[in-house]
Image 1: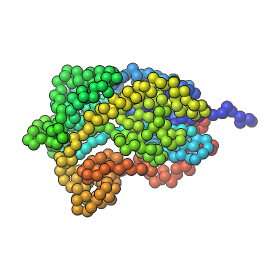
Image 2: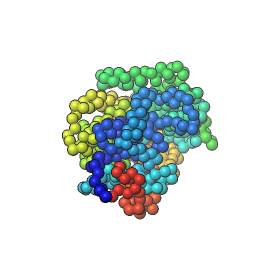
Image 3: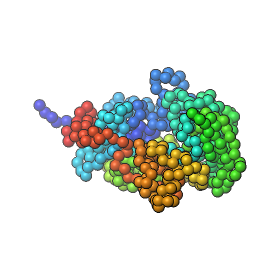
Image 4: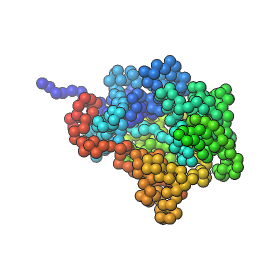
Length: 487
């Protein structure tokens, strides 16, 4: 019997099914490239387009989102490409490593753990990979921040979008950055009394940079819309203020906020206690760079963020990156970068130079959005002297329960001069998150520059999985989707 068949299509693996990953999948599949999208969630959309479970029976899920029409176009396009056999979705797959071989077909292997227990190893083999792994929240500690009822701003939004639940009935939304606006308005629309929106930055500073903002009238209109909703829901807004302490016994009962001076220090005596049962707090976003670092991709220190060229290529052959992993910039920028990455990868996988004119409009929008968010990044920064409010008894590393006092002792009495030495002396950053969450806090309290750690794995992996990696583990290939690849 003949075994001849048509040459296999090039295979593009995309890690992350948020705006960047979905835009790239549609762009690449539209050029005849076979795509596998691997994502840790149970459904595509990422954090931005997080959907409630069908079992919850949400009648109007669009009420929790903006840019809903964009999501519908992505969803419908994805369904068409899945039906055509050009896109394969791999939900509930938690990627822990991308392995690269020097040569040969399918030279990139995406290693993942499948299922809620994350114990079933899967390998997806591809000719090229896109890292669209998004970002995560930066949260700085303060006394009382470990109380039940204190959640991250993004966590409050995720509970509302994905579970249609809120953690309390009276909330304070605090920290800094544009994310606070949709969180506060979303909670208010859900019936929560938002007692205050506490922003540590001075948004009036945006006026001095108006020239860099006028090119994105859509983003300015979006911000104005949030401001109007805050007024409609009568949410008090305190700018140049910060939360200095959370109070409570078994759970949160109130927070104390204080005014900041021009240098970012708390003004003596200028404090206000606000009763609440929920505090949603965040201090901006950080890109997920673990997979890129393990692959040896260049990571810029300002962020940190994965470096990419005009085609969204990293400096490692066969690896593209798009979305928040290349710098925090919101869904619109992620969609644009994902589209460019998908078109570029498709052309190069099919053996031709990309025609950059095909995405000239997207490239222009990308530069405008990058400039817009560079301005926001310069304005919405945590208070310069936030560590002065962190008492010695405040936990800074929750995994290992390391206090600020222990970190300060490591520096002042034991001679630690960098974050790595602090880690060795205190165990700060040695827990489950491996310093991903507490890194900025430990570095700030220690007074050291935060180092970029190159970790071999992006998440904890059972030893049994490591023992089977590349051997008995299941490998998925687009030509052999239910069994091991023949190579």
